[in-house]
Image (cartoon, rainbow, N blue to C red; front, side, top):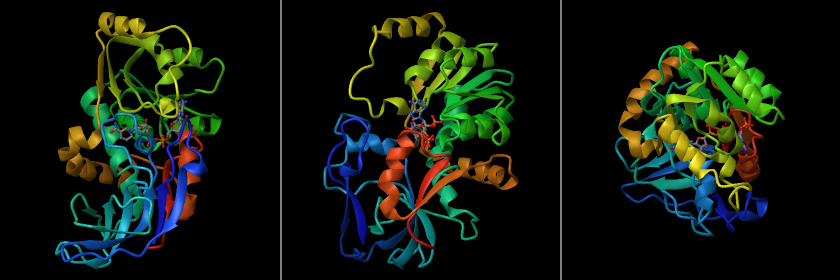
Length: 337
Ligand code: NDP
């Protein structure tokens, strides 16, 4: 059983030295457990937070722990009635080949599902996050303007497409011309701005002639700085993630902008609300899955995966994802079904 463990805590961007590959015996399920074999491993930005021991909404990993992560896995032994050998499930098996589970939080996937790995992306945690944050906190209204960064990733792509179908003017932000072209041509954004461009703030302003009503916050940093002056009165900001800051080791240079931010919140009467998807919205997952499965099947919502092959590639793919090397939802193929 190959396992990738946290070898040391990163300072700044993670490096290969923060991970170590180990092997252990394949675990044995007890009489109330199942044995799972990982097929796909999801790589997500939140994992960077768990590698650090800074206080957060969830406990950190300890050095020596197996890296955590959502997985699509196959049941290879079952001592729980509702799971049969051969079933495919979404589980939290982490960065390893085999794990045992008592079945809590393990979801069975439809046997006929064309792309089981979508259970980690558009039909799983990130898609659900984009959908709920947009609809419940963003309160999108037809004709309004929505902005979202990391627009080709699984959260941003969901936000943009759902907002587009609801009749909003949608402006994506992404790293590079290829991602921006994909956001417009395939995902249906009305515009997409490359955040690496020198005149990024001006381009964003030009793309939002009526200001911004919903800013779905995925990244923070200089993207937020460009968005803030464009926000309209009563704009809503679902605060989903701040990926540009996850590797930061100190506060940004320059003068303290807290009073500017608070002044904007007050004078524009902004709604700024953070959320952690399954904490706030877990009960809504079944209804989301039903709706989104139909949309994906009909082509109304499109998705793109950035698949890498082999568990040993997970650290490199994870480090790259935080830097924007991924193009679509990052998934590691660990084994064949
Ligand atoms: P992605 O697959 O989109 O990967 C992260 C992307 O962030 C990169 O590909 C890159 O895209 C972009 N990025 C990285 N650095 C910067 C930067 N300095 N400026 C602008 N963009 C940057 O991630 P997900 O779709 O999985 O997640 C998106 C966000 O949602 C993250 O912040 C994540 O933490 C958050 N999240 C929050 C949840 C919650 O419950 N609150 C649940 C799930 C996700 P590009 O090259 O286009 O810049």
